[in-house]
Length: 291
Image 1 (spheres, rainbow, N blue to C red):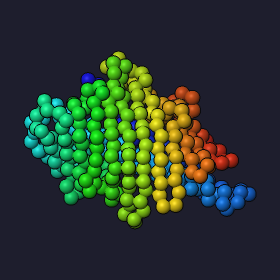
Image 2 (image 1 turned 45 degrees about the vertical axis):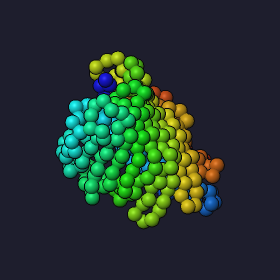
Image 3 (image 1 turned 180 degrees about the vertical axis):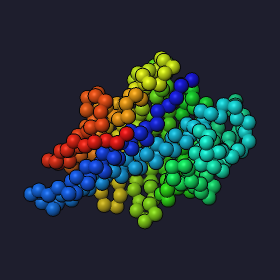
């Protein structure tokens, strides 16, 4: 049994902050580039920012499923109301049910029902259902889970698609991969973004100890997003590496390409600091990351 799992929202949040900082810088910077070149830079940065937001939504669904499956080994099959302080669904009044309601029969359907809406302590809102088909207890190595959504909204954004999770954990540490197919995000203003992608997180250090302070993880993967006007490809070119003892990604590179135009964020070569280099076209700037 793994001592914990690593939430990649930390990685995604840092990336979003980096993109936000560089967007402000580039918006204020004037040079001799043409308006078309400037528009291309802004479009590329915007795509990177949007992918970070969307992947965080699907990563969040993964986290909800892991929380439920990891802590329900003593399930009795009854629907239950989760409290805000529990590690399950993180807002009150959520119904969690298992069908069939036993510890033996698989595959099994897990339904997380947020009803007409609830709000978490951090302000995130949810409504609708996350429906999960699991082939065995998900904390077991090799277990798979398939997530679908039924009228599910996060912060007013409707979430659709199929998300497939696989537990890659071993004696060396925790790991998982999740793939999104047919992803679709519909925003309150009517904007629709189609999304697909795969992420793999693997523990690289600390798996054999009881302390979390020596743990380190690497995140790899790629994604594609499309709206009515353009498409973008996102690639983790070099694994994003983070030690639990460090508040920042300390190694790796992420790139986003829109119409053959690429932006990149380089987090360095292993030094634990709050610096990264973001490059868009001929613009390069060292940025400061928030913890």
